[in-house]
Amino acid sequence: HPLQPMSAPASPLPQAHLRPERELQVEGATAGFVSRLIAIAIDVAIVVLLIVSTSSLTQIFALLLPKWVRFTAVLPALIAATVSLIPISYFFVTVAVTGKTVGKGLMGLRIVRAHGSGGLSPARSLVRALAYVVSLVPLGLGFVWVLFDRDRRGWHDMLAGSKVVYEPRSTQL
Image (cartoon, rainbow, N blue to C red; front, side):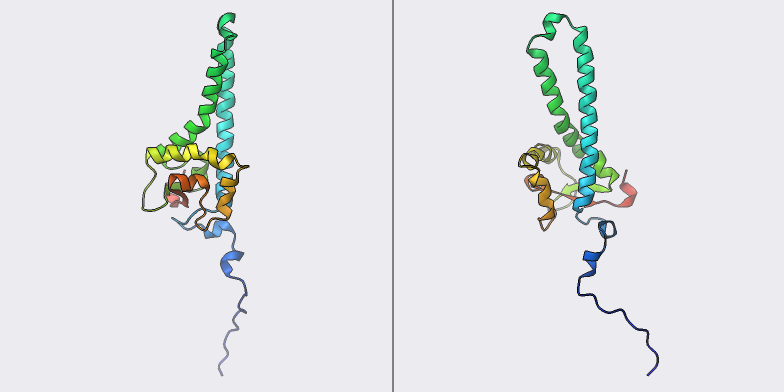
């Protein structure tokens, strides 16, 4: 017999389970939990920065108002309403306009329709932003659900009919 190279023994585990998530990033493939977790951490940092900035500016503005205006219930209610709208506005506007948040863009992710092709409509983007509350309230279980769902979709994805995928490198931020 001619000499044949020895082949490596077959592994009892599927090779995909041994590769890190970054090696599995295939354009259009559903994004993994770690990529999404890092993206949401970036987005939360941006939202916190926006809230702190807005609150600080509002406090400075309030100091310029007469005392009788500062002590009415209207100003605190207005501040609270503005601050609570920042997260929803951020997630709605960024997804409706660009198909991704800043964090998702930095991680090479895009939000698309779960069935069919293309990005989300403004209406679905708003539903997704509002549905973040549903995913967050029960101790974040709706976000963790990505680990258990076959299609790696969170509750907010299911409610909005969306999924998060890896995008082509040429269109990343």
